[in-house]
Image (cartoon, rainbow, N blue to C red):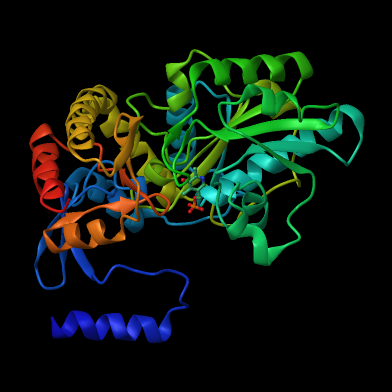
Length: 395
Ligand SMILES: *Cc1c(COP(=O)(O)O)cnc(C)c1O
């Protein structure tokens, strides 16, 4: 343990203390398992917060990334590169969106979506006082624009002022949205399933009503699918369960399965009536390395029928977690869909998570009282069984 403790002390001396980290230094991964630097193995039900969808040590993925490293890493957006072109094609096919802009992270994708909304409205009426409606308890990232639409006051408090003209409604409360819509509203933004805010899926009636409001008023419906997208709920994108389509959407996390990439996408109509040359840019976004990773991710999703697999294992996880929830009085709620589920307790869950780590199970919270289950999408039912056994021994 000595060495691990030394590294942790060094980290606490040198890194800015913006996270209360669990006391583990991970070294490598294999499939759905992680290994710390002492060789202890852990079943992973976090996947780096929904990033490593295809599991660790994935040979074909690693090969695709490595060969791109040897070939070409970067050229800038002033030139074309084949991996980015192919990645855009794959995203369009999966999402049905028409135009793609690549970023390096989720927050940057949200920033781009926000700029798209303002530009779209500006081109219509030339005004500069447009409003965006976001949701309470939402999470969209830590940069100023993304933070401004994040519905957790404590994240915003010390950093005021935020960008202006943001209003907050309640997810799944359509009246709270309607009360905020006016002629200045340019976009309604929400996560199709709220992740950090505690695994709250938007319900079908709400999504359809928002779609209707947006259609009637030429407002952009913008969905953040950074956590709940990329097969996580058993479809490529969570909104595909509902038969309605957003005008603008964001993706990141599992989009690159380890290589940091993000994207925001839009319909052709929005693409033709918003950002133009000079309006937006990025040095690294759309680089060949990220493109190669995305292409390989979609290739494996297709080949391994990941969305079908998630539907099946997700249902199994749902049944097993329901049994756990019924057996424990301190569990108040079980919710979620596919491989994005949560157990809400009537007390903080940090102790349970630490116990689980001791027993070789990686879990993560979402808020203080909720354990979030967000494993690699390639877990099998036997992994669910192992997780449930370990979890039960911690409750
Ligand atoms: C993680 C997340 C973000 C931010 O992504 P980063 O890559 O951390 O910037 C935005 N929206 C949602 C829904 C997320 O889960």
